[in-house]
Amino acid sequence: MGLEETVITRRSRRGIQESQVATRSYPPAFIAWFLLIFSILLSVSFYAGPLLKHLPNGEVSIGRLLGMLMNKGGTPYLDFVTDKGPIYLLLTQLGSIKIFVFLIALIIQIFIYYFTLVILFKMVRRVVLEDKIAFVTTLIAGFLLSRVTFGGEVASLYVVPLISGSVYIVTSYLDEVGINDAAFILYGLFGALAAFIDSTQLVFWVVASVFLLVYNLVHHRFKMLIYQVLCVLFGSLLVIFPVFVQAVGAGNLNALLQNVFNNRLTNLLQTHLNNGVQDSLLVLLLYGVLIPIVPFILSIFSDTAKRWQNGYILVSLFAGLTLFFTVSGYQIALLAGIVPFLVIILAAWIKTLSTWRIFPLASNRKLSMIGVLLLLIISSVGLPLAGAADYGLNLKSAITSNQQTSEKKIAAWIKKESSAKDTIFVAVADSNIYQLASRKPASKYVLQSGVDLANYQSASKQLISELKANQPKYLVIPAKDFEKNAKLSVVQKEIIALATASYQPVQISGVNAKTYYIGQLKVKAAAAPNASNVSQTVPDESVTE
Image (cartoon, rainbow, N blue to C red; front, top):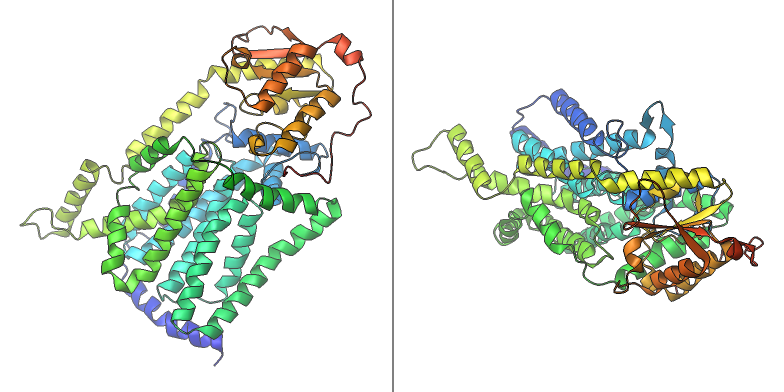
């Protein structure tokens, strides 16, 4: 009998026993269909859904811009700079394709949600051995994911199913539940995919790998450790090899590695604690996943049988929170990565509460469950209805935003008054105007790219240099940046100076001049020596110092 068969047989015994005592309240077909319908309902409320016409913002808008640039023949990391991985760019490019009234991004997100929720349900059921608890906490996880990745189409959402699958594999192994060790090929494949979507998410694989290493060494499973390492390497190469081959063919391998890994991590390490901590903690509290962390920590000291598994979950959770709290700006979508860990903690807490006797004379399990529900509501733990209401309020705010109307009018005017060869530059919070006007940026550095230019002086200088050389026909800048007391970065000051010297303001009907400044290139400035013969891209230059 081979090594793999021996280990699988030894560890499968407990898994079979646990599956026999787990309570199955719902038929598997019901779970599968319900989660599919739930995934569809969540996805149609996103930007890619056909029901909503509101414009995306933040990371979603820049993702769509990058997809547009690639569809126009742009080469990632050479013709435009981003710290997101090539697989994320591929997904955004595919997602921008429209089939009838649907964007392919909608189909991608339905699949992501369905796969994630199925994995979470199976994982939670294995931990708590209760279908009902697993079902309820999985629904809460779906609402929480929708909230933190509001609108969808963000890198963190694309990584969630990969994190969930890896957590399922690692927790099963640490809990000595039957699992085919070849699953570590998937573990390596999931990690490599995540690295080429958003490299910062590798923190979860680093934590898991450390726990697997220490666990195998403590239990003297040296041969198993070597076997797992080989499986992980093989799974990783299934992704790394084709990505490298494609990058070598495109001539952007060096730029890819520089931006996706070095610059992404450098940008992270050079930032400070972001200012969205209170809002984020409120969201986690509202969805009932914050309070159960305390009793879960205490369980490590009492439940020795699950000490390894619970320790891995907690360390991963705090690693994810540390990543979120230190990243540049307020990117609540990064909280998506800790949802698989939070849902296990929440389910374990509900399982614990279900064993408590709420009333001294209550011997009926149903009466006990009623008491649990009352306790959950009173203590603000597990409030999916409140979470759904919170999501609805954010959705309504996005739909009724006046800013979207202004952006549409600005983009329509620019598209009418310029040619396809003209470039523009937008210094507002999102990139919708680029896409709606179907006009390219005048620089490969766009302010919405997620790259914190404050950390890279050379990139800031190159951005201004490219704007002066390429002379975008129109500038769109927040009007407040022109106020005397405005707090501006060095880049913003340079843009204001350029607008003042070479552009003249234009007024667009229906656009409030106190909100947006739209500048048109002066004829005199356009007649001056420009960059018509100057390349917009510098293939070998990166944003690092």
